[in-house]
Length: 232
Image 1 (cartoon, one colour):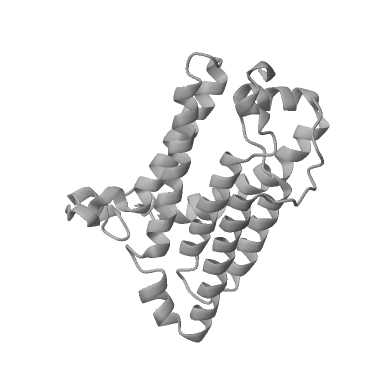
Image 2 (image 1 turned 30 degrees about the horizontal axis):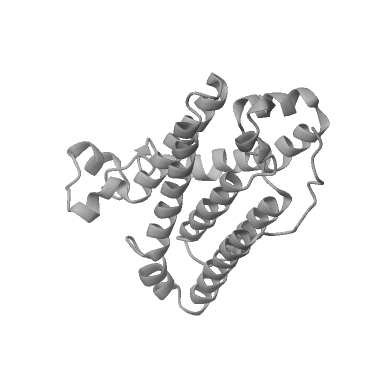
């Protein structure tokens, strides 16, 4: 099975639109944070604001996309492919729920005693839990996410092209391989976020993450894993 070159920057309409949104949100956030950090924190990335809800919506969209593929292929795909697809659906659903604290503020639900005592924001979610002196959020999004992105965006594509055994394994599990412009978009987002002069810079990074991962799921480099059942 032959692939086009990974170094292909040709974009379809949906990719152009989403990248434009990513760039706009990041650059506008950077400008606002430089001019007035208080406006940035209290209006631009405020709780229950457009950036937070936008992140939740895109994570939920990714979950629905994976769930749709799982349901449509339930009887025609093998177990490993289905397992990966439903895992991704649940993972992105969990991410969307965590982003809005599982609708706690939307429905006016009060946090239980456990979350009041152990959550940095007193909310019903896991990513803001404090264990000892460490916030789970910093561990997950600071260390683990960084390691994952390096492996997934750089090492996995390289191994996919170099080793036929890895390519076969990726196909069997239905793992989407990012395109080169997905990797470039993450690098661009990382650079912009690093120079935002605010402690709440990661809110816009999460938004960019959600949008770019939706694109990876929608139009991966190895799109045949969703269209060619014989590839298994």
